[in-house]
Length: 633
Image 1 (cartoon, one colour):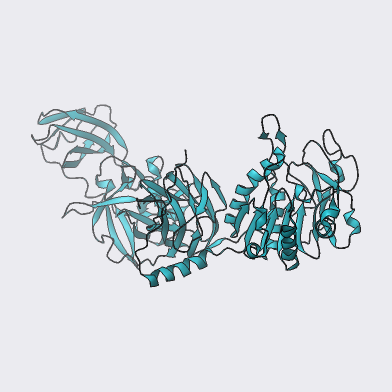
Image 2 (cartoon, helix red, strand yellow; image 1 turned 90 degrees about the vertical axis):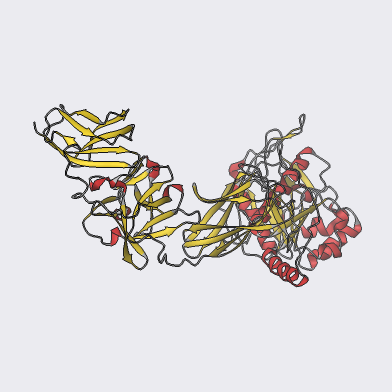
């Protein structure tokens, strides 16, 4: 169930000067491109009522997506000069004015250059002489003659594709479902009328019980002397016994393009969808291009206009934006929440760019601004606001380019570190014998890296005497380079949550791949898998090379050495459990045991090991020893 909004007057504590300044700035940002007022009756013929009920929210969303405002009223007495002067476009959804004063005001509005769009029954009459200017001069259609039944789609032929409302229409297209009207007057004989679309002959027979089998039937037209468009659709199919609509007037995407472009032309704007919002810049929350679950409402935030509300978990909004320059941006959300606990997730495609908690503000119209940081790619794109947890209103989103200072002295230059992925496992150089992984439960020598200064704020990472390479993002990363070059250079990036990320010279980020596969350097943005916690190895530790990891065993470390079948080794008495692992010299694990109990001296069965050199690894808590041993035969 949607959250009920409490409406209270926003108590402003800021100074009058700051209030006025904020209002001016916000009002400028939210000024609609033009304003539309729709008149409707909504009381007769269930099919017309159903159309009105879907039209009002559909036009509200269309307006929000394209930067104009939409209001509707069933008070036809608002057809007066004082009211109409506030609007650039008037719609008649399901009726026409009947009073003399209403009619006179509308005619004056049109004579003065106002815009108008009418649907279906707004042209219906069997007494055109009763208002001859409207039915015979303005519309030109005269009296209603006949109609099809039942409601069906029709193939429409676009007769004029040069008009601003038809620029994006194909030669023919399939309409949404409607009942279709014909008229006594032949519009082709009226030099003031320009038919834009008519029924294409391929539609015949048109209808199911009352059928047109041939003829000329104009569907969309304009009067050259006025800024107007009439469209004959607007009657939904209905189950009259249950009063349930069976179709939608807005089911045809092509037809919807005509509606949008017609409104834009009437409002004095160029045809086509609204341009992408520029970033850096502010995006109004109600300016979405698509959404699920939300509603818009009037806001009392500074500057007025509308905000997005009724946000529940799983709801989302899409925005078309044009990012001028790739990089890190400060993103700000203007939010209000009675109880808090919600969250905003910014996404690009399926990638989560940032998740931001929404605090309690005390009421649904008490506003605050919250801030996060996000990395955006350049170019025109669609970003999504997802609500993992709802319970808040959103007024606008602002993006400001973030000046990133080169990470001077941020990287622990000269230190030996370990890197732990978001999956809780450690990054391993794998001794340079295979692609790097993020799968180690505890750091040992292969999981230690020395951070070296590569100049210009960049770093090299070295493990076991070899350098980590991005492999230019073309394959899994490795740690097997004898000397650093371009692919072995990384940006050391400190994230806002205290983790670090590594960006290769190819401009992409190192990913742990969640430990599910070998690590890569091909991610365009930073997500969870591209974040690492680092820790400095205890003071005095040094990078261990392949030559120094193997100690010369003392007599009691491992014996006999060389051995033939059984190898003995010792462990200090204080350790009650340990692990023992045998590796070959390529770094491959050959044997691994978990040993419990304190015995002082332990034995390992090496009878099945082939002849050769091995590394014996003994670990317990803070104790770690590796020794070189030899299998004699």
